[in-house]
Length: 393
Image (cartoon, rainbow, N blue to C red; front, side, top):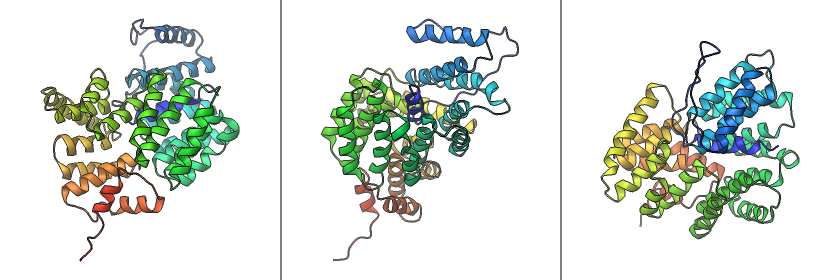
């Protein structure tokens, strides 16, 4: 149960992390992969776990503990290499005749980090067939289904958490999904009440709840409430790249560019965070923007060469807002939309369609999805209104 939030943060952060790191397998048992510097308690813990795994390679619980810690560090340090380390540890256990449900669930986490959602869901379904009461698998499946815009399926995956997970975890899962499918006001009220009365949940669970509340408040158009919820999330003092990215977007929307720079000036390893920093620098006409634009060009090009399509949404924003290339932005946004359908994905697609002048055929599937799902978002509505036929007076 205590490992549930590892999966949540890993999933959320994958949206903003740098390119996925492929696992490297040593040629001999004596080969040194990397010397990790001692930087705080987590590093000593990793070193100890690695030694235990190396000394007893048949100890699955210790191997899974190391995998989880690598995933956590990948999120906290904004360093995608840790996902590669995690996969290298996990791979031998996937080669067994019947991988355990826990192994399959962690493998699904690594697949979703690459935005390979069908493969992730396949592993989760296998895990749940083995162990129907595995809360991590239900939660990870719900999160993927929500990102895909399959809200009915996501809700069905959330419901078992009422019996299997801490109360706040279940409430965030359920109300996040409901808030995207036409029940934003009641979902916000229920989640706000749940986080206010939560007593025994881990700090990570509360941070996830505050972030979810902030995002819902933004979609409601309540900037003051969103600001308060974001501050509550930061006050918990837990490193979280997803929180940095979503709050930076909030600040960008409200033209608080100086605050974006203060927030992200030391967070340039992750492409998504560098993108947001550069957008603020450009708005303030800072010379650093040109350097960062060139860096982002190189990073996105490298991702394409590797066949990594997990950054198409951010690259679409880069093309539209930093390079002023709406046609290329629209193409990327459409490819991104075919994989994931969050409000931010709809937003960049509609913005690019309007900027390119292609306001009918290209945007129609997205507009139909928003109408059918009853998704409410105060940031999207002005864009949606621009696609409506003008009334003849």
